[in-house]
Image (cartoon, rainbow, N blue to C red):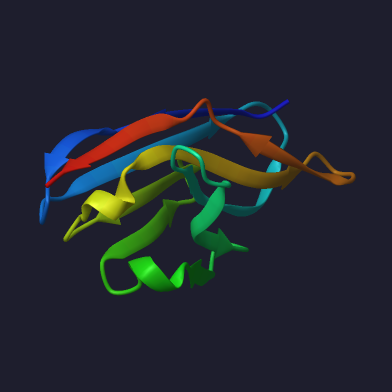
Length: 119
């Protein structure tokens, strides 16, 4: 089992910044992809940013140029630097990882952290 623990959410004004962190813990696992999804009230969960194989990145169109994802492989921790935040970014942000333990891969999710951007 892989556990994901998120931190860094909160309340910020429009134009402000927040940095989310997510640490993966467990034993004997390999991370294939790690990143962030978000879910706003009444909407489906959507991809925000993802790092694949520790190298390539993928961003949602509406966060490109504002959000930056990075990973510390030694700490199994992924970060999401969010700048120029807008009220539309308000959502619960979920850490995600696709990981394996020498066999098939599984999806793992964090408990979510609330990000609220006030206008």
